[in-house]
Length: 132
Image 1 (cartoon, rainbow, N blue to C red):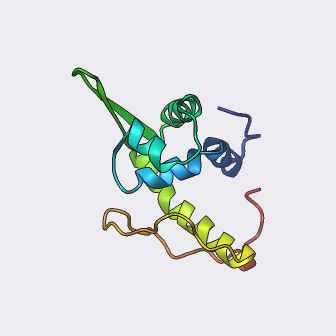
Image 2 (cartoon, rainbow, N blue to C red; image 1 turned 135 degrees about the vertical axis):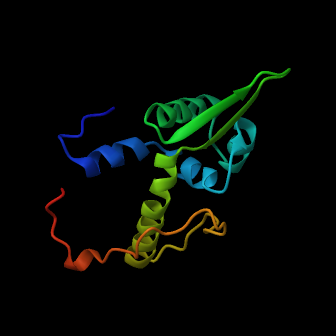
């Protein structure tokens, strides 16, 4: 894990740092995907980079990798419980970015009942920065 200076916010940011990690986690929030399915959804990612970022997400406990012995081998990726817990956080970041920068979301929204917001969005205007 990258240096986080004892800050849980920085540690979380470090886990998601990587050009394709946020999009991969978001896509996996809709259900398990095979490597090629995920690669096809992330236009422009190379297989080498996607494999490396999925390994990092697996190492950090965000993604689960399941291999079924067959010919050819079948490997699927899904979110771990810790990865699923990140989805409301990503949704809050999306909402904040949309409001702050006027950017429309480019990925599909939350449509599945398995993803339930655990809390209402946090208003950053009334929060202290004690966690930074």
